[in-house]
Every structure is written in C-alpha cells, then in structure tokens.
Image 1: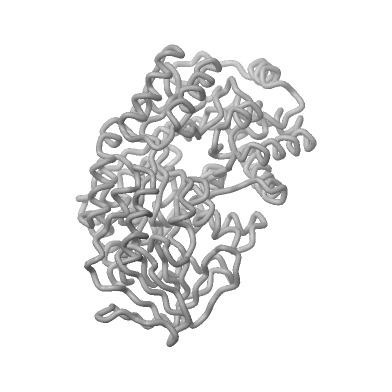
Image 2: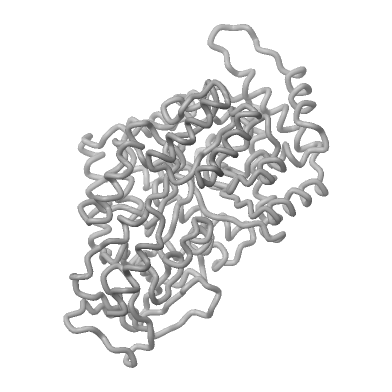
Length: 507
C-alpha cells in the first residue's frame, strides 16, 4: 500500500513533460538482480554481492543478497560479476526528426542512454513530441526519456532555418517563447544570431513563463553577461576564448576583418573560415588567465553549467587525418549520410583553408585544457555529444565523450556523473533519477566490467533497464542488427544532417 502511495506521489511531483513516461503499469512481475555490484554514483563506495529489486518502474529494494525478501513470481537474474550503474543521459543531441525516431532511439537504448535533452528540431519533429513521450511511456516504442527545447531562437535569419523560429523584434521573440511553452517545450534554446535586446527580452519572457534557457552565447552578448542573466547551460563552451581575451569583442572582430577580405570570386566562401582563423589566433594570443579565472568564478556563483561536446570538437579539428574512415560504427549510418560527412562534400567543411585547419587544432587543445581547469575550479559539467554531427555516432559517442572527460582529469566516477547524477540535478529530477537508490525510477545499465577501474568499461553493456523494462544483451544486439540490415538493404531513411554553424561564434 505504501509503495503504491509513494509511486503516485512521485508521478505527481515530476514535471508534466515526464509524467507520462513514469506511468508504466505495476502488473508486470518484479525483476531481481542477485549478486550484483552496485555503483550508485553518489560518491559512496561500490557495494558488492547485492540484490536489487525492480517493481513496476521503480527500484523497490536494495540489500545484501540472501538477506532481502524476493517477491514471488519475480524474474530473477544471476548478476554475479556484473556492475549496475544509472542509465546514461546525452544532454546535447538532435534526435527529434521524424526520419530519425526509430533508429536513433534504438541506438541510444542499445548504448545505455536512457535519457536525452534534445537541443532543437523541426516544426514536424516538435509536433510529434507528445506522441513520442506517450508511446515510450506505454511501451509501444523503445526510447529514452525526452527533455526538449522544441525549436531554436536565432533572430531574423537563423543559421539552421528548419530548426528555428525566426523573429524580427523583441515582441516577436517574446511571442516565440510563449508559443514554445504552450506547445510543450521544456526550456528555450538560444543561438548565435539573437540581437542583444532580443536576448534579454527572451530572458525576461522565459522567466515569466517559468522556463529555463540554454544554448549558445549570442555574438552581441558576453559569457559574463549570459551567466549573470541566468542562462542555465553553455553549449560547446560558449565563447570562452573570446570572453577571456584582453581585447574587447569588437576589437577582435575589427582586427580579423582587416586581415581577411572576400576574394570577390563567385561561389568562393573561403574568406569566412580564413577570417575565423585570424580571429581565433587573436583570441589565443590575447588570452588572459586572470580573466578566465574570473569567468569560472562567475559560472560557479551563477550555477552556470557546461556541456562542452569535446568529441565533436575533436572530430571537426582532426577530420582530415584519415583516422575516421573505416570506423565499424559506420554500419549504423546510411550510405548517403556517410557521403555528406566527407569534407569535400560538406558545405561547412570544404571551404576551410590550411590555416583554418591548423588553428582549429590549436583551439581544440586550448579548450580541452580549459575544461580541465574549469573542472579543477569547481565548474559544473554534463555530457552532450551534438550527434548527428559528422563522424559522431548516436549513443556510441556518449562513451567517447566519457573517455575525453577522463582524459581531461575527471576521475572515472566524476566522468560517469556527467552522464548520470549531474543531468538529473541540472533538470531538477535528482529525487527520481540519476542514481541507483531505493525509490528511484529504474533506468539502469548492467555492465560486464567495472567503469570505476576504466571508464571505457561503460561500453561493455550486458543489459539495459528503461522505465523498469528489462532489455537483455540479446535484445540489444537484435536492435543493432536490425538497423545495420536496414542500411545494407538500402531501406533506412535518409537522415538529413543539420547544417551546423561551424563558422559562427565560436568556430
């Protein structure tokens, strides 16, 4: 009786966007893992030889194996030698397009990703949001929990028109915020092209609508200002080098523009990456460690989170070195999309100059180092991938990003927290998700090896539990084979790659 009351209270307390996803029936038999090692990611020591019981969609009990009562007719799984962690989150992805739903959702679950924050989609994708949540909740579709921005706000001439709501003035910007709230958006995503006055109008309206806002840093706003305004997360590290320069942003731009002029040749866009390369060199040369320390302190004071998307930065910096061809994960990508990934076929890659390519690698290394420094300073991080950017793989790249966090100085536990408890805290869902504890929703991953010994062990997935539903290794492999066979047969939908703003601020 008390368990039923608790489950009801939990559903009532969750935000509307997740209520439907927590309503799984409790009529299914309980699932029991015996002899398992629990890594709850709270920071407490791992607990070995444990029994974890799942009833309905909740973790109903955790205790020493042999000392805890197992429900009758339960599905009992001998999990000796296995490790239990919370389900993973990808906090920066673009999955909500109609042609992506089936394959993307299965790839995510097969990789242990049980929650996503979608950072912008088309009008059609946004219109399907409520239906997708319902289908995932009632079990007619396999998929993750979804937190979504809906559509992006990026001014009158957005960089990604199909994903954006254009607006021409502050009043229209406010109306766009209200439209997104009315149609189920969980937060507002802001982008590079928002005029300064409209940005602060969006900030004001979002607060009136009780919505958080996150995303890029508009060109006309500094990182200090965006943090002070309450922007909840900065994607891709925002404009961190620009903000840490000893020069004012306008002075940086004026210097870069003076150094590079358009060639005047029809169809020649090489001046854009050339100018970005010059601007980046100026930012690197005028970098102020003191100013960056002040920025980190501002992030900590304002509770400004970072989703650095390190793997996509690495890919776009080293895409020419040949190491990305022949990746076995390419079998899950349609052939037409693989062709679009090639630098010579991608509009935003083929106009890069040799100097841009050289400077891009310097920028990546500097930003990687800054992630290490921010982490040491106490800035908060969460994992995002920005898939489906070139040479990133839905679900799989989450594990690549975990490895980069570890390389940047995060302990394996701290890296794991960027994809588990940290997203739950960021979303205000830490009472129901993010850790392995009694009463929490049963979004879980069973591993064949200990991720606290080597973060790469998160790839060794034995089973996934999503909303209390157990998916065995065989089922996960079946899902992956189905996607591979579709692509081999040529039946897979042609996933349209976002025209990412690689030449915006930051490059």
